[in-house]
Image 1: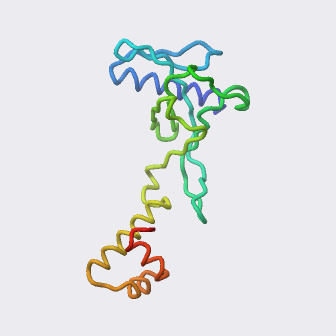
Image 2: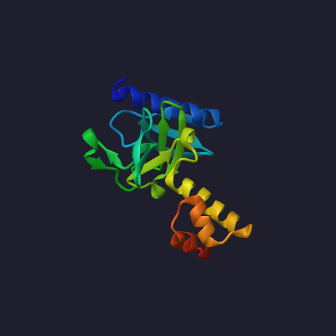
Image 3: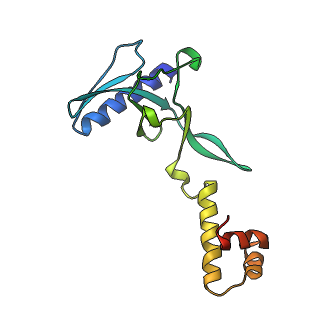
Length: 168
């Protein structure tokens, strides 16, 4: 599938989603800084659609975990330009492989945004870290001392202490 076809598919999916939510939506003309116009409760919103075919490897400390990468504020051929203030009201991000999408106000969008794959839930660094910290706190609440927790989990005792103090 060409980049143009993937982009068009994303635009049509966004229109369909907005219509299914009870609003009016239609594709804009080529050459405008937005792809879709939606009438939401009497207000016209300009929506720029960003589409990706599937997840990419995203660095997560020593490992790479899949996520959906969107270069939100780039536009023009090869992404050489950026959107100006007032060009777009909302950015829509579409993952073609799952047909998932998200919407974010232009004022809250970052230059590049990464969304996690639901298929990999629990494997991202911060999720693994939370599970580890919860286990440390549970073992401590059950009466296990820091050195025993460190030995059982194969972690440094100073790390266990930081978690229990709430500084890690």
